[in-house]
Image 1 (cartoon, rainbow, N blue to C red):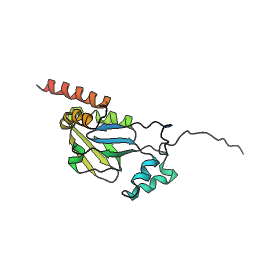
Image 2 (cartoon, rainbow, N blue to C red):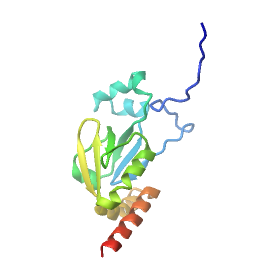
Image 3 (cartoon, rainbow, N blue to C red):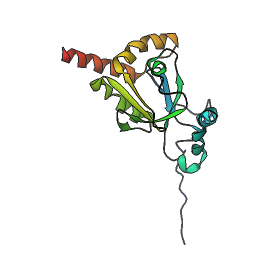
Image 4 (cartoon, rainbow, N blue to C red):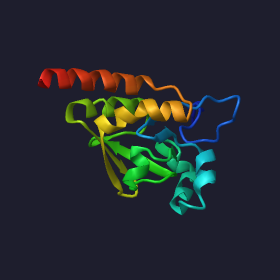
Length: 166
C-alpha cells in the first residue's frame, strides 16, 4: 500500500487574518465585491442563514464572490434588488467565481450598455452602465476610494462605443 500527502495550499473560502492576508475587492455601481471568506460568513450569518453551508469544508474548495457593502444613493442601492451578504455567481450571463472572472465578464457591459448580475439565491439585477460610470466620480470622492482599473477601462470602452455609434 502506498499513498502520498499533497499540500493543496489555502482553501479559497477560509478565514483571513487582517494585517497578514491581502483581500482583493472591486467597487462598481456602489457595491463592494470581494472573495467570500469565512469572516464574511460569520459577519452576515444572522441576516443570511443559508451562508452556514460555507462552514462545511466541502463548500470551501471553490471560490465565490460576496457583495459586502452597498453605498447609499448608488445605482445598486436605488435598484433595491441586492443587499449586503449576497453571493454573486453570474455577471452578464457568465458564471463567475473570482474577481478576475468578474472583471472579464463586466467588460462585456461596454458593448450592451448594461451590467447584469445574478445571485445564488436567484435574485437578478440590471444596471445601466452609463449611469454607473457617471456616478463613479461622485461616489469615489464622497466615500474616499480610488476608482478601479475596471471602471477606468469600462469608461474608455463605453466612450469608444459611443463615438463609433455617432
